[in-house]
Image 1 (spheres, chains in turn yellow, green):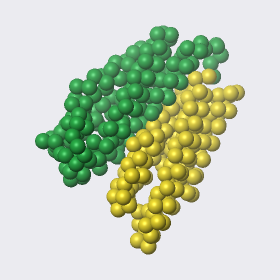
Image 2: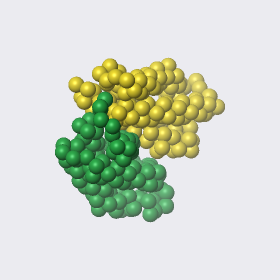
Image 3: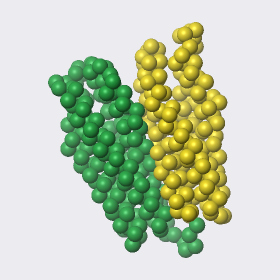
Length: 147
Length: 157
């Protein structure tokens, strides 16, 4: 059973961390340089695709990391619990902080250009923070699984 | 948690293989899920611009991650035995197929776009886009299978 938790945790965590990292590496520079209409259009396209999958992957990742943590002991349990807290932090911060920004960027007609520029800068900063947390959490999960 | 003490070489190879493998696999899955879907819907002129920019960004990073994964998996296979070694060897073969396939099929298409000025659309761009999409979906499947085998191999050590 421990092995099943480990496989599920590492596969879901790896795909999640790899996905958010590639957004940070490939999309953020393009969005940072795009003019505002282009940014809003391409950002909306990306959200349509990613918003269905990434949260689901993060939830699977959290559940399997908690499951793995409960199935092992000692250092592995501590590391896996820390990884689960990291994935939880990513989920909560995404829902509470970044999703409202996404909605304002994509839908609001009343936002001024300076508002959208500010929202874009905040979202990019937030995404870099959650990418860092996701990578650290995945690294902890990997170390926990290799103890 | 394993009771025997694990050699540092083995532990490091597992961490490197899973870390780089996750970033590589997550990256190609992201392309398959998001970029490929969007590129199919863009007009060719917009596609040519976006594809060229994307390739220029991804090209140094993803092949390097693939190589690190393959090398770490090779070290892992050399210091383990039995089922973990077998799984790692199969994964290495799959990663090799992804690398060789990328060089033979994807790279000539990438260079058609990368070698032109931004905004220039290569001849038969629609055909190139379809071929690249089909190949990318195929290599994504192979890469995911390889990552799954590497993860499974680690849990059997």
